[in-house]
Image: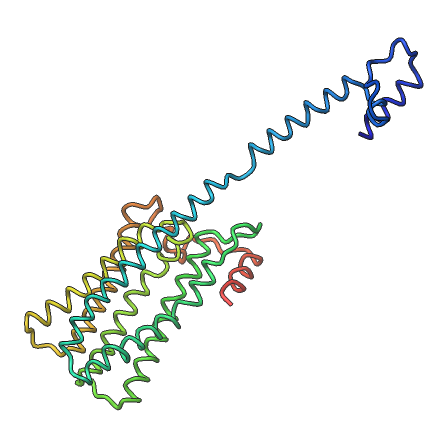
Length: 294
């Protein structure tokens, strides 16, 4: 409007009335000072700007579809991973006495959850909260460099946790509870070996791995216990529970590593950021990694 006003004023002052372009006659005063060709050009530019804005604006349908896809995969994985143990536990608890039932339903699962939570939860949340909308985004290699720190930290937590349980309960290594604790510690470490690939799969939106891996691992864990119990194999029930946890962890480990080694479009060496030819991140990136971890 300012450009139009200036042009109209210049035309009025410098050109005779006969050579002036057409105007809006009989309209409001604000329209009477505008040149008709200038108005037409402005309307054309406005229409083009609206079309361009409509072309680059995000599509709500595509965003909603992406959200629903994530919800579908997570719901399927969680539902199958919960419904199978729910049906299985109703049968298995009938095979235990009171002491074994307390250890199976509370003590050993509490030990597993504590070790896994303390070992990986902080690293998992730090890596998955990498802000992709900021200008300083951690690359997959830098995320893996943080994620692989789970292994030594998990080994430390598993050792301290196992030693704590053995000392508190005053157990000998020949006791079934002590054997179950040590076997579960091994199962936790085996599961933690797949954690860097789990974090990478979440950042790259490979949700389908979790849908297939976790329910399959849960089903194999239940089948392992069923075979040991129904086959009347002479193994303590707490040890059976621990062995079934090893089967679960092995399935998680094999599932994630098989997918990334055979099906993902990623080189094997890219999964190991501590190789000799790895270039260290510059100081700002190192500070980003440290702040993300904290």
